Length: 423
Image (cartoon, rainbow, N blue to C red; front, side):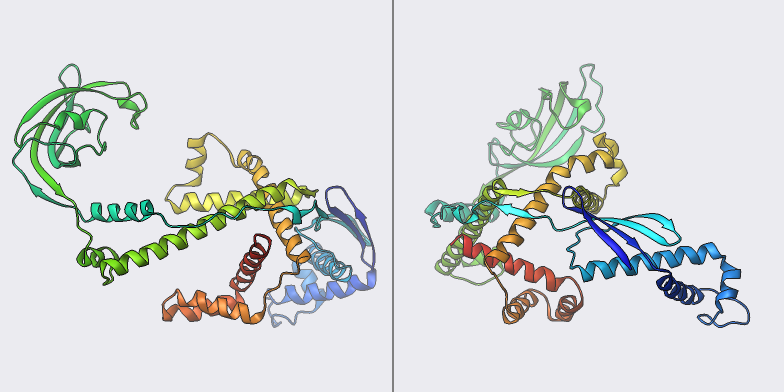
């Protein structure tokens, strides 16, 4: 087999291949064997159809096409393995001639990456501590969640939970559709209703009726109500006074599902806040490191690799939108855009993602960061412990035959790298 490899710009290569006739005979035989398995001809068993009979049935052109496919796949793979080419994308194939079969394969390969003195990157280590305010905030939130309400016979004030009947009318006195509600619950001062509405209820007593005008804001979420003036008729049906919950063993069990004394709870709470803050600061430092790293990278990215990554980002977006119950075509219409425009828009993010992956991979190699099988096994057991016992076999199977093994190793390598460079 004759072939040449030519370097193109932006880390792409062009492989020109000329397949010898004797190899084409082998590929044609293989093509006939594969095709004969899917063809039913009376008097012959699938997979045992003579080449001449198969050609008469399918036609020479059909067999030639499959022969060329096998020849290109086989010779291209052989060259990639023999020359240890680090290909990153699927090749673009252009057939130059059929006799002899000659084709050109253009493919992106691992680009050369230069990182200017990455060892000089230093990220300040922040002190992690839990303050009294951190604890008080959580405790106050718990008290609010534990709030109980009881009926009172007095004028309504902010903080009360009330129930109201109301309906809106236009300036001509006609009822406006979709503005009527009965026994509508609202906590006064919570600003869940139209701006100014709740303030009109403050001071009213149970069973009292009232009429007042409301000006809808220009940025109101319903466009047909924006900048409109409307008269509302309101009747206050119920007033309940709040009583803030007390932090005790009963409330703690109700909120957490676990039995703890107040002191035990505070200690666990402090540990949890510390762990969360530590994780947040670590993530912040990693992000700062990556931003500085990106400024020191010099690399030419193949256009095909960027296009492939942009397509992947678009696919992620499409799946996310459809998971929320919206058709992607509807999203495009509402956004007044197209898939092609989105692909172009995401190229910058695609380049960023690729540069980060290449840089991290480069530094992992430079720093000789490695993960042992023992470490991976320990991490896998930790992952499995997060799942019920009846699902752990599936996790193991995904590790053995799926993508979990690779993704787990990559996460551990990156974690170990950051532990080293941010120490």
